[in-house]
Length: 177
Image 1 (cartoon, rainbow, N blue to C red):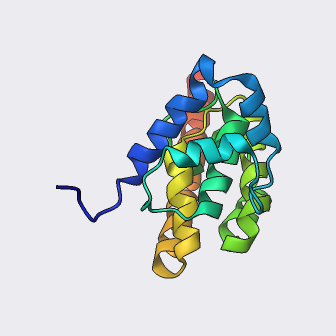
Image 2: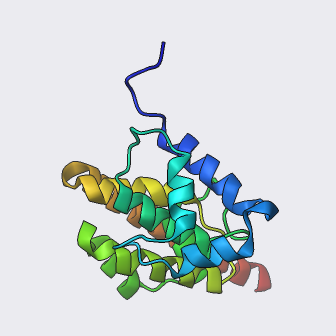
C-alpha cells in the first residue's frame, strides 16, 4: 500500500544527483539546465527530471527548478554529499559580506543568491552537498522557525570552520617557534 507521505528529500535529491552525474545524461541537457532561469523553468531537461519525481515532494516546482539549476552548475564533478554548507563556504573563501547576504535572503532572493553561491564554490574547486542546499532552499521557502534554523546552521558551520582554521594556524605558528 503506498504511503501518503512524500519521499524523503535526500532520497529524491540523490536520485537527481546520480542522473546529473551519469555520462549518458549528456552535456547538452546539463548545459540547458545551467542556462535555465529557475524563476521560469522551461528547459525540457528540467521537465524530464521532474517527471521522474513522485507527484508529492517536499519542494514545489520553482524550488526544484532552483535546486536542479544549482546542481547542474556543480555537476558532474563538484557534487558531493556530506559537507556542511557553511563549512564549504568558509573553505572556499566566502567572505562575511556574502555570508550576510545569504543569511538575510528570503525565498524571492534565492534565484539570485543560490546560483552565485554555487558558482563561487565551484570556482574555488570545492564540493557542494546538494542535500544541504535542498534543505536550505526548502527551509527558506517555508519561512519562520525552519528558515531561522537553516540560517543558524549555516552560520554555525561557517564560524566553526573559521575557528578550527584559526586554531590550526595557531598550532602551526607554535610548531615553528
